[in-house]
Image 1: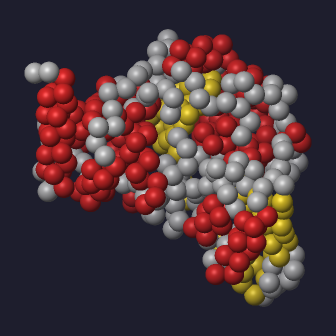
Image 2: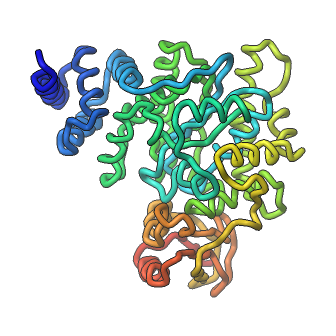
Length: 424
């Protein structure tokens, strides 16, 4: 069979397999592998790939299909190679402005463990971890470059796009983005495939739930946790998960550069740092360190170590080493962050208590301002849930390099309010 004939046959098998999955039928590993391979090599058009995504959203996967899809996604791409314990963290997310990863990576690296963080760009929020890191350093590297960075400084925060790790996933994400949804099973496959390909041996999962998070309730979070644990066990990855309720951003910045500034505020221990973001990062770091220490039979308390590494300034020093290794400024600081050209204050229309922050509207307005393409665009929350405000007091700041986008965001806020204020 020549190459052209073989390619046509593989495409036919993939299309038939997608049809089967749409009908709720189970697939063989060969069918699953062929779908992943055809997507990875961009031989399936976006319409067919969208049908495949829709099939997983509607029917979901059996435990064995989860394993086989993850295996196939890994085997159709590149893999990184590291020795010893390889730590990692992932958040299912869905709530903007919670950039704990960029604090966790230097803490874990400073504690002596390798942590190659392979991140995606934004899907449902105005910034992904890769978008935020890209605002202060490069994130596009080849596999050998990643291995060198991690071996030299202990960790990295890079984008998957240039690595060829689980390449089918990036294409699937591309077709998901306009729909702004991911199925739970697809999230699990995506996360685990990248962790396996990166050589992860120990993983902490952040599973926030809430009315505007990807996981809406604790029952969904428990189901996802169990699926992650079962799948991780099959790939011999030790995993620990934190299920937590989230109804607003842990940080105050929404958008790449504003979220990077929040990270630096925490690493620098600035008095205005977002404490909720700090505590989230310390907790997750501690959980990850606990399972790494257990593997090495080291008697230390992970959260105590994480807090000391952060408070002492060692995490900041390590973060700057990582930034330098990724071709950024090794003296990066919050006061060096270049802000957007235009800024506008959003004032409270009445006096009262902030009862609720609408995260959907927050995301929509930040995107109107230009995030994540405009790295400087976004929102800085002056007030959060539970805060008291006076009429005409500043509630948030709007940033953009395009003046008309500020005006558009202001108009949008009339119909899509971010804050619900209870008059008192």
